[in-house]
Length: 473
Image (cartoon, rainbow, N blue to C red; front, side, top):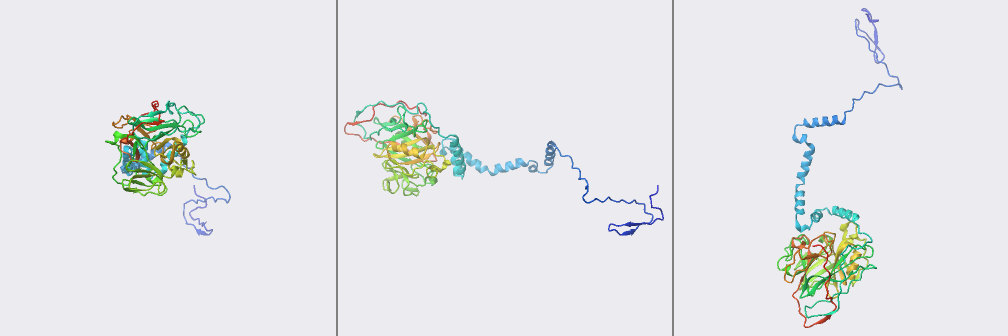
């Protein structure tokens, strides 16, 4: 079939794209293809049809195939490679943390040890967050009654004549409770620890720290410094200045034969806002005005503001500072604020009712230790004041660091975890804590060689002993 207008002798001028014409070729047999112009505003060309989307299984299989075809082992296992690189890069961290977790000097539990490790490696903020979370979920309950046995049964005593024996301080009056209806025996003193020629050198009392959190019980220990000698033991990291100290944990040797009690000291030096002095060495410069425990060469302690109440002298063998006084002239100092967590323990992220401890001195020189859970700084000062302290300071805080252990070994026999007792049954540590290395400093009281009286004298010291404490050992 012949194409129209395409005879052998035909000649046609073809239009060009510019609208002009060009001569056609004679004898061409190629048909013309004319595109249909798109009208402006009309429908345009149809979009290309997209290929069907692969299923998730197909995409996963394709990805695996692509990884399988890679040439290197690392390329074929990218996730494992990244994990291995991270693991190797952090190897020093794992080794350091693992060593800390097994280092008894850093604490009595793995949690306490790792907490110390995190703090020492710039993780104070993490610890603060963790502590804040813990105390948020474990806030002290309001109301309620103390656990059974937390406050011992009352002592039935009479005023008698004390036979000739070692010179000792008179026992203070019972502590006035803070609650309107006290539990039987609340605030009364009970003998604890060793005796010196039959005379108890320490007493304990138990009471609620305020009238709101009435299920909590705070422990108070009273120590007769005429019968007891005080010693400051340095820790491996407190003061942490590298000196070789004469007294460091573990307590051992002959010191165990006279040990009557051991208890916690103050904050870490970077948090204490004070200094540390022992045996002629100033490990951390002493700060004027800071609350200070001062120990003389004969083991006699005193507490006061540095530079005013207590000063340096040739007889001073140890000074441990921690924050400011919380009791002065027998009263809580003005301006104590239970919500001021920066001044009285900023490691707790704003939580004010936590485990706290404090140490005070009475007018006749006895030491008074207070420790317990759910205490604000105001509660702590109030209890110290009612226990007879004329000057007192806050010591360490937090569950892992508040502890007081008394030892009831027979005269001349060594103190041990078996004859040790916690001041309060809910303390987290055990009486053998200071018989192993310790990162933190601590304080001990030990029986002195007794000074004998020349004759009998009247005393109000009770002739009866308290019922056995139900504290855990």
